Image (cartoon, rainbow, N blue to C red; front, side, top):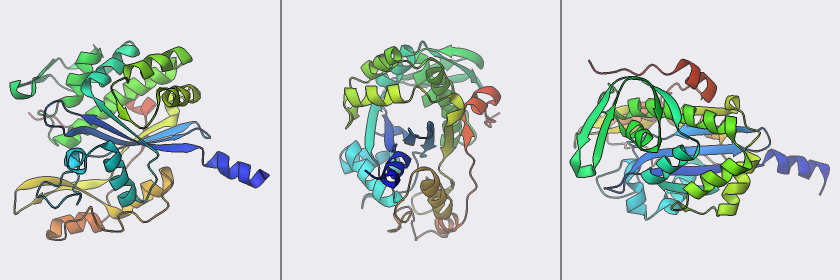
Length: 303
């Protein structure tokens, strides 16, 4: 191998991983994230995908991206769809249930999160019961599940929940970054025994051990830029991605080798409001987890 080839190989030593978090009842994705892990720079970028994102993955009327898992037939098909649409290579997929989330939190000994408000919600049909107090709380696996699923008090609904999930992710990743060791990597891999993934246990262990050098300052969070709009015919609210802004993110952080949304699957041309957002430019900001953990996020709460 030539020196130039070795450099190119090192520069490409990164992985794009699609992470899906499923609810227990309807088979919908409560959490969707693209994660780029770069073992050369010891950095990771986590891009949150709003679950209400409009996407033409089906001829049916329900086109929110959180339904793609059921319609397309699994996490591998969602990864294929998103990779093609976003012009990137998605190397691996990981689909977890809420039990796995709780097990991972328990594996690191729980996390400390400053809750932005009292959180109380009851939905017996989903078996969902949330009862958390505002302020700094130590969340074990069961309480962490309550926190990441809560949304009813946020002015911006699901976008508010995504910001709240940043608080959780910052606390979790910071804890992992501080304490990551081969032993913790084994515990986290063991927590993932019921995960739908194309990664073997040895793959996960290897990636975990290789990530030991990552510090909190090396992990960044961003929400894919866009805005909410309503499909006036059905009255359904969607999140519409901004093509130019997302093309920037995919090129800069996820190694895009094709056009972002070359086939227009993230656009419903029947609605002018969708087109204005899609063809406009939505601002975005990357924040590192240390900053989120230290300063928090201003989440608007209903009065």
